[in-house]
Length: 367
Image 1: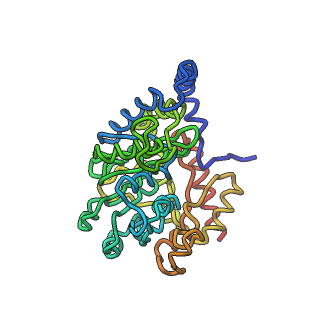
Image 2: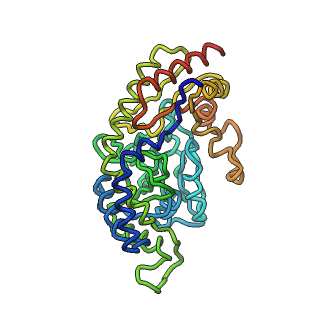
């Protein structure tokens, strides 16, 4: 069997933190502080600092984080939130779960990020917020959305440690939600997420909402959730957070290596990083013709490539009620047909990337 290159290799990270995490897990087990224990508070403080904000509230997962962002802003039935069509479904689901309506807009042709002009055009009397997504590891052009005069709910699930014009992911707009799904740049050993904000009132609202709508035990003035960051996951996240900057730099080195390896490969459109962005390469996504056939060839060659995302939000059955049809968001549809995600993780070796590039060249030449 030839070389095998996984899309993501979490085992490398686990080996790096194993001793530290084992000691932390033993500490929690001995103390019995399993729910909102000291490690949760410590991680929240550390991640707030790492995100350049005053407050971090740990929650159960990234989808809950975005929904709680919406609810903390008072968004609910009858309201609208602008969301890109080119994103993971959780962005739109978080809005829909509040009873509000996600208003979808197309992405730009180059980076696949929210089309700012399209978003501004869709602002209407019912629009309560915009939810730009930091797709694949780079921050969306947040400052360009200022003319809307509306709160931004930053979807920072794929961009821990990224910067735009020196400002950290998770610090833009009124509030941000992030995910610590295991494959993220900062990933837990299960589901986990967080809300970040500089607004103390919003932080207080989210803290109450995540804990049954209560900021005083057994007193529940509003309907809330059971959506708390697990203490054992906080132990893992604290260990990984200390290494995040170094791991992100390894991702940047790998992205530069891919750029060089693929520079002369016909038919490949390499990913673009917007000016002012410090990309953290959660995903390294190229565009290729006949994508599905190329993907099959790569997988046959032992390359664990993938697709983010094969069906744009407006064509998902879950959002059929929005009334969209094929052709409504052509750039998102083109991205869904052409994008191909190559293996990317800290610790990927040069010879692994060379194998990926060679297999991609062979797959394209066979088309």
